Structures are given as C-alpha cells and as structure tokens.
Length: 118
Image (cartoon, rainbow, N blue to C red; front, top):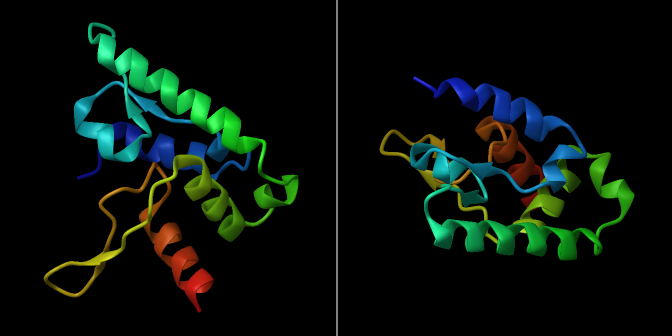
C-alpha cells in the first residue's frame, strides 16, 4: 500500500519545473521520498532544510533550460541538485528497487536509468 501523498508527490515531480525544487517532507515515514525532513519543533531540521534549499538554489544555476524538456535529463538535473546517487537494487525476487525515489515514480526512474546507462 502506498502512502496517500505519494501519488501527489509523483505528479508534482513529473512537472518539469517542480523537479528542480527541493521536497521537504513533514512525516518521518516519508523521509526517503524527500530531500529533507522538516519538523517544526526540531531546530536541526530547520538548519538541514535551509541547507538543502540553498544547495538547490546554487546548483540550479548550473543547469540549462533544456534539462527540463527531457525526462532523462530531468533525472540527471535532479541528481545534480541533490548530490545523491541513484542506487537501484535487486529485491529477493529479482525486481529492481529504489531505496530513494525523491517522489519520482520508481518505474520512471528505473526506465530512465536504464536508458542513460545504455
């Protein structure tokens, strides 16, 4: 079962301009989907969120507008912004699995990674 907000996050990430914005999650259970966990009562999370927002702002300046037009290039742009690797793992039954999807649809991420690595 998928969390209720996951489909909405995936739709947001599918929008070209939205993928260039950091995703702050408020629920620790959704932390792997976001770029930072933000909790109002936790001062460290304020600092972490501010750092993520600043990193995205600085790294967006490196990108060309053409990076938004193509889904594969959007993935590359997003990985540049996050400075995190995309690690695809195999489950016990041989299926591809992503521990971190940043709100992108896992099937779209896996397909893009396959195309980019071909």
